[in-house]
Image (tube, rainbow, N blue to C red; front, side, top):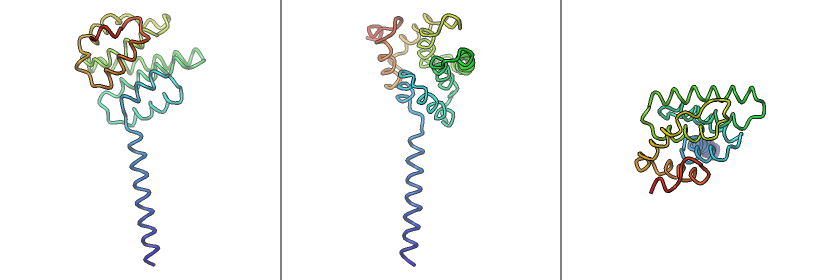
Length: 164
């Protein structure tokens, strides 16, 4: 009888520990977000969208919007590409309007605009965003600074020298 109770207690403990580990793995982390944005793997984007939606992150619509626009880039069907880009753009721009001083959002918008196809007409704020990112770079969390410097390696707009 005592062995069965110990077994049940052990089972409950293992279930709780497993749930806690799964919950931690699903928390929003900016470093992972930026890695997903960089690689552009469709399955990873979808997984990150789910994590962002479930997070308690303030203004999480900005992150979700950026991911949706990145997802649009990876889709094959033009109508789906346009649908996801528009949906993402609305979410992202709404979040940016709610928090216009968010340097990270300006960086994300710059990165998206730099690679957006001309047909979507999403290029008008590149210089404005570049100035904001340059001005506030030092005030950003380490994960965001790292993402910006990584982005500079392939950007025609931002350069690592801009931040020294």
